[in-house]
Length: 402
Image (tube, rainbow, N blue to C red; front, side, top):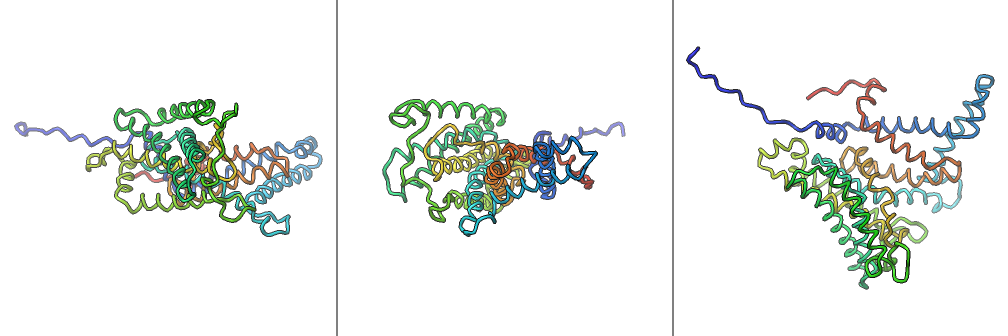
């Protein structure tokens, strides 16, 4: 009727931004996509192994005359490379001593420790729709703090070691928390902030390692700190024949704690709610800005645990600017492959630890460039970040729109 007042239609609250939707698509997809991504990466890596092999290239010159030689050389190159990777990462069947046979597995676990801890830090931020790209800076600051405590004080191990680990986690938490605070207070994009903090952290640590009285070892001209005291070194858990130390156990504890945090705590509920839809979470009474800050503090502490692991481990003694060893960026791949879930990150960390441990054996025994392993890791990221491509290759049904 003409006299009836027409009320304006209520505008529905805006949903998550496109970048947040893409992040959730990448970080929370099904496990099958991750397995297929690894499979595709291995297949492409196999092609690269064959291409870089001298015998394969030689047989390719007469492939039409004797194709069997070409395919046999390709198979030998690929099989030799991956069996060498297995022997260097899991079990070496070419030796008789059992301790030496399982030593590769302990090396995998040693490399996996910091990857798991840092991956948890990145994955936890993902669950709140935050990109924590600042793993390198957080690890450097954490390693510097843990290293300074490790060589400055003379304390019993029961006090000294926990204090050094706590100092590393605190430094990582504060460095990441700065990005979370800026995100909460000013809306500054955490990707830009954390990337810039990587550079700031690197040059701060480099400056401290180049100045006597700060981190540089007394009487040294190299950018390296004094070695940690024995009371602050992570003890080996299988004896002196193996390099595996307590850092891996701490990473397992971190997996359990993060799982409990996300699935059994009120804070975990708020983190997941903010990650799903910050507008809806805000309407439900959740302080989104505070949640961002808290998430980045916890994420930085986990990455800081990885930094402390590197400095206080039994292999790397003292602080250097190389202590990150690419772990800060590898952690992003681990978190993506693990779908930002603690148990998934544990499995992905073990896989990448195997890549690191076996890559050197593959290079030494078969002459395969260790960079091939890095290519495989990069391809895993590529395929994980492109779920439609994986579904198209394997003719999987398209994901239903919600």
